[in-house]
Length: 249
Ligand code: ADP
Image 1: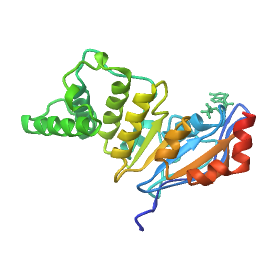
Image 2: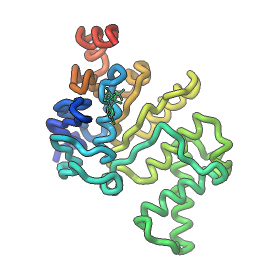
Image 3: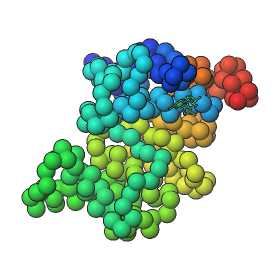
Image 4: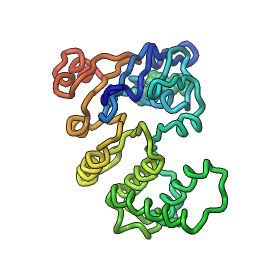
């Protein structure tokens, strides 16, 4: 396999809701080690596509492969276990629990497959150490002991990113990583994703085009469930069909 093999590949992916086609024959190739952005006007099918990739929705037709393995129709737990981690838009943190404890718990759950209740001291120390590394990676090292509920919004999103990274994913899906953020947090998040991207493969839905321009190696533009354009940001941005889709949206 070459270094840039496709971690994720979809072929002819279709999702219909009671006769309405939300995703219509999408062929996506996400190369290893790249950041791949999904953009498009509201209703283009981005969320539906994400839900198909994570097993939250079952495709009406088509195929999804992860590192060459067919995962079409696999339920979310299995897709997660095979290495697809999703950082959610909504916060799902325990307000009283520290940032560090969240990451330790995630590491423990991954290591034990959710079935192991007893953990040796040595193993726990390893989790604590790894949790510290992950929190440092997302620049939360100074806030590790703070209850998650007391973290500012931007830092909560960073913690969610650390939780996704705790899965050591083959593919990291980011659902609007800068949604609802002010300029300062947007800049911090771009810097953060730029740091964590090394050696990782990322697919993100993102509305902020300057974020897409800063981070994405490849951009796929969706419109009415179909791929309208695909390629590097600069060429996609200049594509007349894309300009029209955005102006007409
Ligand atoms: P985007 O994320 O790009 O805004 P979505 O994937 O949310 O787009 O939606 C694509 C289209 O599919 C929209 O027209 C939406 O109304 C429709 N859709 C999404 N989910 C459902 C559903 N569960 N039932 C019926 N229609 C849906």
